[in-house]
Image (tube, rainbow over all chains, first blue to last red; front, top):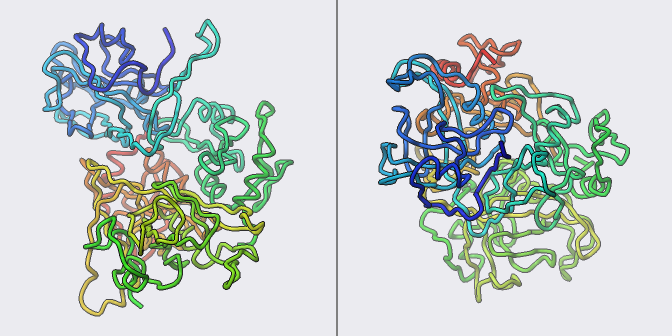
Length: 295
Length: 295
């Protein structure tokens, strides 16, 4: 099994159609040949196919309410037990929390005005903006995912690589970086995932680990901010793993960090993993530009 | 002094020009007749004028790096002391934290290719997406605000009232609601401000109050979510004041609340102000749709 690719597939334009699931799979737009959701609990979901399988799906074009997987009787297609937030459903929840882009493919059997006449059509990148459970039309619980199309604003170009995991499966050289235009909603890169995992999702200030139904939650905070005029790099040496509370305080001048990792503005010391080489120039930049000792 | 109006002014289109500051002031687009920033520390900033006063301003069209107020010698216009994060600078920082839309007006003296030939031009709504301090060209510290134009996506319509404060100054009837199309970045309504102030920005779960250089920070969380298919109301009875950590956990099924305000999924009880009438139907909706006891 190859790496999981998030985001646009190079060479595949929005609107491109495929005759069948095999062609679709070979294009890398949606690898599984049967499953509607491509993804794993550890990595998140990278693509879905709307193929008319679920009576509860809704399609408003740029907004889709997609029904999770499981609990259906195979021959009849009827929902016969509750769905669970596990496996591919959990993968979609992880994509929600991490802001990962999900490729959406509509199939001819999907009952909506947005479906293609025949075959399968790649309809672009969507963000999972919400998920919840409810009693479906069948009376059994289903998990639902509201997805919203990512429209690229011509003046907001963010180059984010398609996230690539299982990189050790590459046999030759470094993984290719696929640059794609994405709105700033998408924030989770391979690097932010890396810094979170390095700290097991525990905040480097308070060691809090936020537990949710889609697993632990933490945020990767840039020490020297990205974007003009700061132009801090998206690099592990410029990232901290913080809980949302400390992320807010860090970005809004509530505290800073000395070169010896003492906290400034609150007691204690930053927890730093021995393998985490934080660039002290960036800490200095933060103290100088963000931190305000007077308030 | 009348109420402060946030967002678009009804009847004023983007691109409209004004001969002078008096005409601009009478239009309500930018009320102060001299100051570059309209706003207060308590309410946030609602508009700014780019008029060439600061040598450190940058203008990229849809992104502006705006220099704060203060520290300049009046006759020469030169920066002679450090700026502070107080008064109108603090107002812009509050707009950043609360996601308030800021009207931007460019004047003829503003040196950029985006300036009007003559007079003042209303150039739409911007969001303050970042602020920091730095040594300006003068060698003194200035506060800078990166602002990004809010481009309205035709398919993402969020009706948010222009936020109106000082409502007791209305002499007749209820304040008018001005509906405007705004992206979902703008989340802070009069109601969310109200629920935060009711709890003095302390989390209803853990009583944490996040302190930042622009004042205390909290988030207003909808119990029954807004938007289809939930369609929870934007109403005080459907809002909680939470710290970011508990907001994440609340939205991602980490905990819920019983009808008697016992926490489910973590120990303790929700703190509820005697004047805060939380609708228990919404708590039930949250338990049923968001909370997952099994993970």
